[in-house]
Length: 104
Image 1 (cartoon, one colour):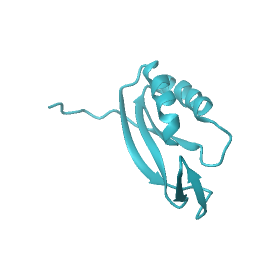
Image 2: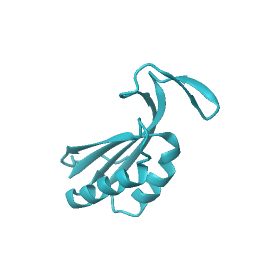
Image 3: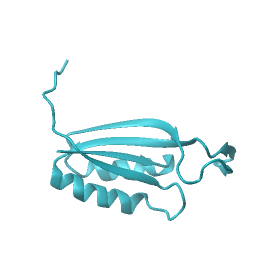
Image 4: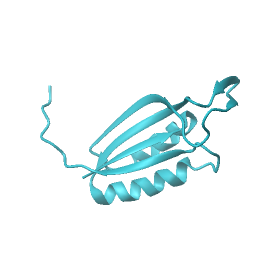
């Protein structure tokens, strides 16, 4: 089992989630987050508003999938989410065993 932690720009979320829906995953969580990477502390226009790039709006998608699905999915997400601009995002793959869950 692998856990994929995906941080992307908000406008890429729909395409990535459509791609995720085409694969067999065990679970998926989507959160709105803020963060920055290499761009550090610059000001930039983003959808009509000026942002301090220290903390840009991002979407965090966490997925749990079988090893073989996770590998294919990570490559496909990287291809779909890539724009070539700084701040496209990150994909982190973590080995994770699926613990016994208590459903309620």
